[in-house]
Length: 349
Ligand code: COI
Image 1 (spheres, protein in one colour):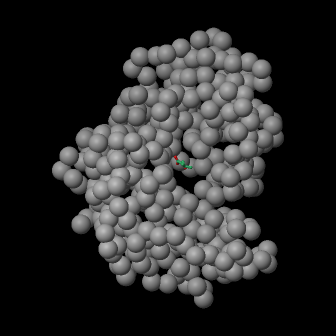
Image 2 (cartoon, rainbow, N blue to C red):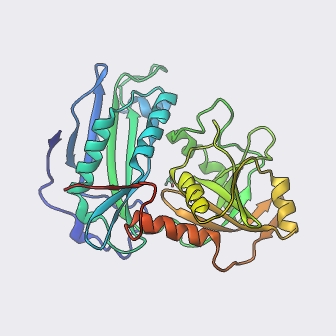
Image 3 (cartoon, rainbow, N blue to C red):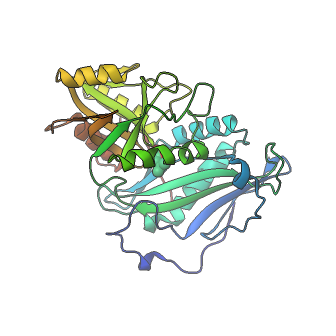
């Protein structure tokens, strides 16, 4: 792999106490191009703008997917990734669904390790902070024919930052728009899934909510996800989360939450949960907690939800499952506890 180092660093211009999610980027980026039917040799180069023709395929047909990962620094300045193999496996599934050639595993891991190691200084060492890593692929042929692109670009960029959400969320149960439909691309991290969600989210925001609680496209009764995250409910002493399907993303944090909850002795049910059940459990006092989980936010507590004209506020709870599970996951991610499931991946210098 070719490595072309930047002449200087931008790091001294950054106030790490005030950076928000995804607003500043490190000194380097990884790039690999697919041309003439194969992935060319990858390179790491200074972070810079791309020069793209206006007819570049992705602008017109949106053949693009991405991943989200995080790097953490421990007290010995050692840098760790969390379950990167799971991200690669999902990236493969997303590529296949969007008819994008899959970057070879060794290119992905070599590029990721080298990039994070070169930009190691950018990984914050403050508890709760991390460096977000965004691998993504897009169709880069210069063509307007509505057929699969011939060329692709695979990039990895990195962005240090703090929490994704600063407060608990209020969510609106969507009963008109859908994030995904059976047979669609909902299980893939396809860029268009996110783009298409912004309009319904803006409507929820205009009603005073922060995010949308997505429901199935047919009946709008079965709950699927929340915003860009997986959704988890605490009913009594059990956690309930919808099982993955072709409309539900196989979240790495979701899987981790399920495993950690089980490790803590909490029963987890992966099953359908309807809006009707949610409201009935709310009224009988059994709905104790709701939270979203994803790479960016880790765990985002939800304090209220709206359905049609009604709003339902949850009571605050001490020693919540969300807090306990978040702490266990963060402790593993930041190398503050044992790693019984082998989820940590050390970045070698
Ligand atoms: C995640 O948290 O996994 C995400 O995909 C969030 C990202 C869209 C900002």
